[in-house]
Length: 284
Image (cartoon, rainbow, N blue to C red; front, side, top):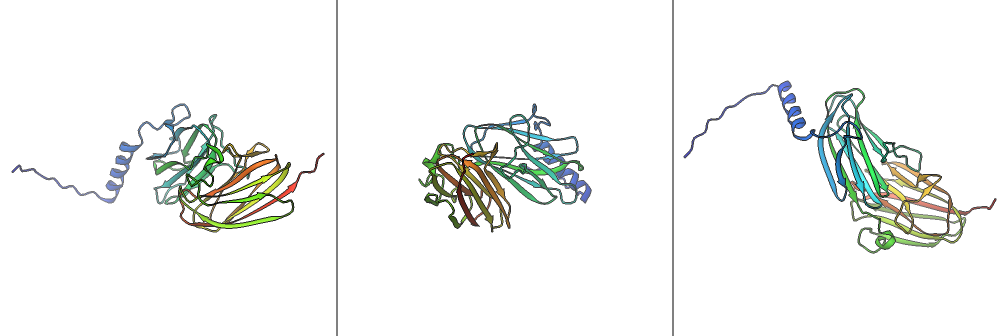
């Protein structure tokens, strides 16, 4: 039998904190660039990517990823520090500009120490970046996860087919002046609700979704190509926090078939209420 010697070393609380911090930094923080040009290249995002690291005042972390088609993307970050500063997480386009949702809000989260938050967005094909940073703290530890779920790039073939979307309701041709009210629950990559409808002439569309659950719910309008519809240059998309509600407004929507898609990538059985109104656009 081989004999081995064992050495036991006791760490005080300060030494222990520094030991685990240096271990995290040594294992996880290498090769994460601090600029767009030096960003960690994740490549084409197909499923999930996870990484732990740390950021400081001048030490930013950038992640670059590519999408081949319209995809629902969720970026989640946990601020592992308990008593320091928040960490800012921002979703950027290929030029490094912060992406803005249809509600006018930037796709940005400020994560307080000990908290976990996410950004969910339906994005068309292209190159994107995630930027992590903190304005005050130094060596702020984090756990980061980036997930692609329920790609809708193939168009309406996935809606109601059971392949990636769950419950689908066909509202038919919308009637001007009528209010449509629905409710349900969503969660995970398979439990996704969608509401298909048709407008037979240029229309003004107002949709409102209230999140009655405990996790964020993503809400977006798609055309038959599976692309998120734009109105006045902004995507008709909103990420709705618990106990909050958002409106999507299409000032002029062309005749055709569309679908509202509702999902929660992280949550489970997140309840919501949905309201939709259509009115005719008066020609000038």
